[in-house]
Image (cartoon, rainbow, N blue to C red):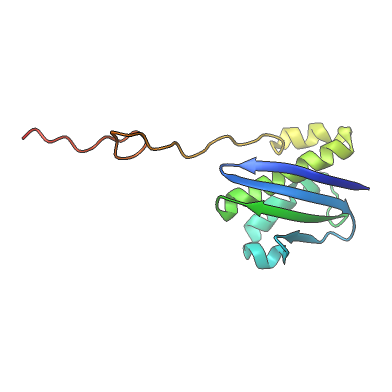
Length: 128
């Protein structure tokens, strides 16, 4: 069973995953997850869909992720894994939806506008 090319996004990071039945190995950009994140909290974020469905250690996941910071990358991977699990078995959707794992977080940094110091902040006013 292979689920290929499922993607997840958050802010400016994009994660593409290839998931198949296996021993629970997660490889991110050709590195082990512990070496890539080095933070147990981010590893837990990635494993949340598996933990919710009690399927920890049943799938091997190969991830290509780029853009954003590592926290946004972890949440993008979580979304991609959730979408892949849902496409495999539609009965898992309500549990993942309830936890909010199928919702793409659309918040991004607003672009800077001309005539402004930042996106919305104006230059300091000088009366004289």
